[in-house]
Length: 483
Image 1 (cartoon, rainbow, N blue to C red):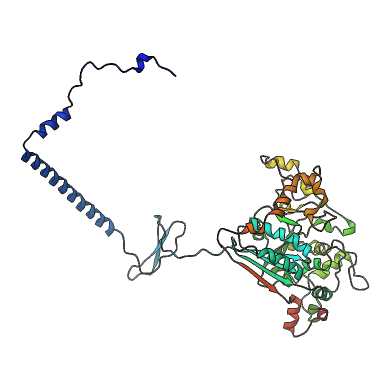
Image 2 (cartoon, rainbow, N blue to C red; image 1 turned 60 degrees about the horizontal axis):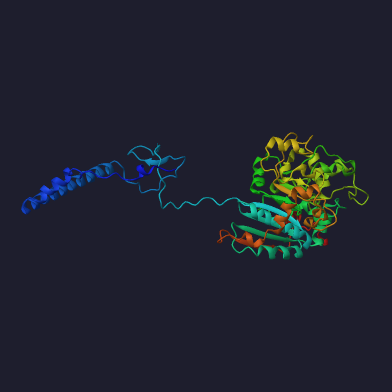
């Protein structure tokens, strides 16, 4: 923008401005006699000092009056503040104590030393036999620590090879962000075989073998002080806070002992329909399972104790065992036995959301995947697959844990040959998540300073619950000699 030169140039001044009245009065005052000026200044100073003293006395009087209206603090501690109310005990001579509510909000004392209760730990029980299993399991546990908002307990049933691998990883955490307990329960093949022999009827033709059957005995292996635990297969990892899964225990009905994903739309006569559940992830109320006496043992039979829950369920589903007393036709390992238990005792079982079972095996992860972050829930539900006829029909499955099972041809799911195929549907949808969680370094779990502690323990000699029962009865259970 420009302006005419005539506008920018300052006009010439034709005359001087008129004299200021303030300047005129100052000149008159300056020409007065010196003594008169000094007297005026002294009087002005005295007037200011008197005014200041009067105002100070009035302010102190107001403070004293206000202070008198507050009773002195009692010598006994005050009750804690609840919902902004200060509950003070007032004692009137000859009358009992009464709690009087003062509805004025007050700040807590600065020297309040009350300490908030420690947050509840999230408890996991995992099974890993061999270093290969530990390599996958380490990714799972790393993801738990990456996202957890609460302290963590890991109760790991394993052999020494898995323990050594995992312990080296945990030792990289020198400044934990929260408390971590790692307890290894070392079991030999002889220990496991002896417990199965005392049960008497179960065998497995699954690739997980005898260690996989230990999922049926977690409540016996862990001490009674551990009341609840989450079990997860090693070929999975979290993508959100596991505290959300732990909170699911709070919704259990009083009689519920376990929860796992259920698939009523699935069926397989060869498997006795055991594919209608997935024991890849389970919420286990260990205290309830102990009270029910889930699995049988010669120790219980010899003592004429109350019967275990499993034998009647096995017979109802599989019929009588073979000539050697074993159920040889049970498929899917431990899952086949879990299916018999929960199908014959539905009151102890609850469904667990598919949010926690994003399986690559049969359900193609329900069509979920990364990308399109602005998509709404309704559109997401319309795009998903394999939910009709399930508890999630018409609802969006929102992934919180990813499970990469049935990726054959490799001991580690993240080395599956299909990941190099850019056109593969699973690769396009989820491979970046696999790369991130596998590559995330353990040292990145260190906080800027130690905010928690890392405790690593080792249980060298595991004593099963049936052995403890027999010891209390003063006898050794049949089959214990195999240990």
